Image 1 (cartoon, rainbow, N blue to C red):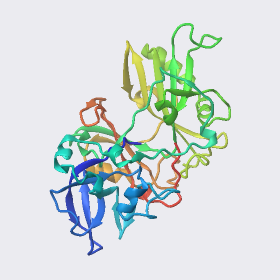
Image 2 (image 1 turned 90 degrees about the vertical axis):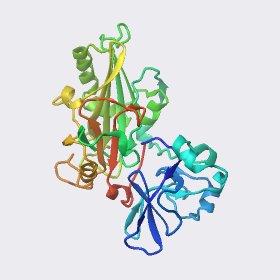
Image 3 (image 1 turned 90 degrees about the horizontal axis):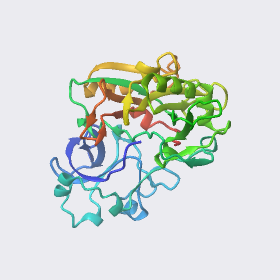
Image 4 (image 1 turned 120 degrees about the vertical axis):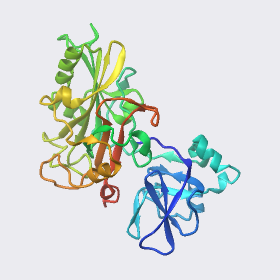
Length: 363
């Protein structure tokens, strides 16, 4: 998931092709449906992104009572309004009436706390839960921003790689090679976590019923991590994979999370080498050793091409069983991004995925 920031933005307003009383207010590459005449191009308003949970008084003020997602009808999600995809909410809340929004847009002020808006946290089903232990040295995963919100992460023509984004649950494995810190056979120590627990520096204690431990044991991930650590001369190796199948999320890719056909595919690798943690290319390191997420495109960065590849049918099963969630974009050579303040990495999500019916969104 991406980070939550509720900011003031300069708008570009477009006609709505199918509604005389509506328009489209653009923020980054997102467009949100607004009432006609409410905003003009060049004006500033507050943008509330998808997956925001709003307080009741703000929902009432915006006239959205009963119209948002979730059991409490308080979560912002993408919808189609008169045929056009609307992502997020554009507004000018009364609580910010005394704020110079134009200056706030320049400063990048985050109004989430002031407005009482929080990030939606997906529920954790029992098979993804378990007893936890402290894991201060676990190699963490990072939030990935949406390229439509931050289109400046990549430069036009920059060499990039697009991999398929899978709809499952992220599994974090860290392998430690410290002397005397392994098991009784002298092997390195392993910690396994989910994205949510990992963000809190917690690991899941091994349990054969747990989804993540079943995946890493079933696919021999600790053994692959040990070999990789030896080859790289690394103190720690992080292998980040997606666990998927029936019983995990609504998109299954022909796998079954309740049986031995539980799906698993690696999407990233990090390693601590000579005291520095580096992000590495899974295809260069683990191809033929572990299942990898499919590579869909390698070439010059072009936003239209990215958005085109983000849609379509999944390729994991080899049968195009259902829609594709989207893609993850990386530079061909790992680098820093001033836009993200960290890795140059982003995602693009399929509109069909965002607006599908009956979808599940677990941690």
